Amino acid sequence: MLIIWGSKRKELELGWVADLCLACGRPTAHRLREVRSVSHLYYISLGNGSLAGYEIVCRECGRVGAAETDDYADFGDEPDEDLGALVERTNPELPRRIVAREDLARRIADGSASPEDRLHALTETLFAFAAELEERGKETHFDLRAGLWLLGVFVAPFAVGVAAQALFAGGSPVPSYLALGSIGVCVVMLVVALATEGSRYARKKLIPQMLPRLRELKPTLEELEEVLGRFKKGGLALGKKLKPLDVFEALAGSSCQNAP
Ligand SMILES: [Zn+2]
Image (tube, rainbow, N blue to C red):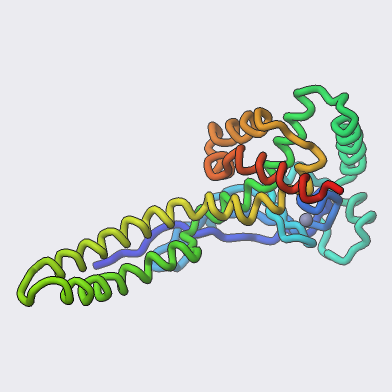
């Protein structure tokens, strides 16, 4: 008998907080939620599970970020509450943090920021995109490439078999071997396509979202390698899937396009 048992993610809404969205580049209202990992048997939850962490979701762009409840003084119930009032109530330290960030941005722009300051700013910017990839990694995603190889698993043996029958004499086992072989090739390519889907997503979807923030920072290839290398060592999917050179080249390409 097949027993379906495992754990699933359960989210509990805690309320609304104000925080700086690094993707939007300004303070916005964020939904704060508790994430629990709950055991299930045949998809029926067993108990309340264990606490997996907290996350915030930007109301404007939907970006998910890691959070700590200690970061906030209180939670609001209303997303439409005036943002200034929400900042004052839930995140009174935010204006001070924003001033510090703006000061750092100025020093980065005029070249007076220290190497440590630059790495800190780059780490913060890239980390804002880490949670999304972690979340995606928990599920299998079929992109066009994986979908085509999956289709190939079904279509290729017929196409190859028919073509081979035209070439080999009747009764020859070769067409059957070739048809079976084509299934094997498509399955291997499907596994490869699924394993590399996260990297393609990071390159095609995340890099364009990062560019506006990264343009202000103009990181060197070495700085990107340093920060993404640390992420990789820490086991973050972003460090494993995102290639520093891809980011660097996209950045160089985009600043050329924007040049007058
Ligand atoms: Zn946002």
